[in-house]
Length: 265
DNA sequence: TCCTATGTTGTATG
DNA sequence: ACATACAACATAGG
Image 1: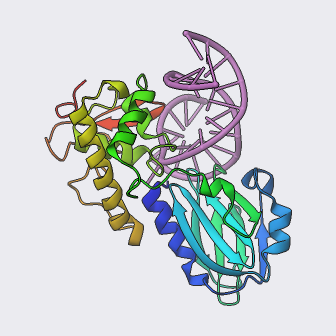
Image 2 (image 1 turned 30 degrees about the horizontal axis):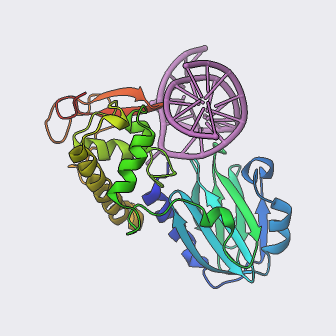
């Protein structure tokens, strides 16, 4: 499910456990979920450590534990974070449960596309520091976007928007939402956009990111019906702007929805 | 049975 | 080496 706003929502679910120590942990499917981490080390070090803070970077979350433990979590396609009572019994798809005195913190993921990285370092781990800067940080400028699109000139713009190196946290629905707002056909090649189209694309990217965080990132409210979001999945969906039928095809390897009258090749 | 699913990566190909 | 395309991963639900 998760793109940057949903990831932000899930990250906050564990805030209930801030500044409390871990009593014990439960790990399941560790060969896959910890495929680039170290489950033994996590099982050894997390108990008795204290959850201090967390952050998001794109679709990654990082949880900091005192004294020197870090838990990086990616939710894949179907991962979730939640909390439950302190005596919670893990279900089939619960791959990590951190038991605290007052509650348990749960990572669950039926499809196992998610991943957990555990590190024992003083500072935040290197892989975290090397993630792409947030789209809404001042360091990312239109010229960076423009240069990136030129470097991927022969990719459909839809595929380019899904590349986490430049568009961290953007996923399938946000990419479609951005292109719909910018009135750009998802099959247009990234290198074919005019300077004006690039400018509009970048402006709408920022708008979609900010609005998604505001609406979904806080309490998972439904986006307003004026967004493409509420119309894109169902057969027979109509464009909220033009009222005409939406189209869906696979572009850039993902099901893509667009409004043919508004987004032209 | 077959198709779909808000993601990423390894591999093949150009 | 770089860019692009696509199968593979694993499970559930329509």
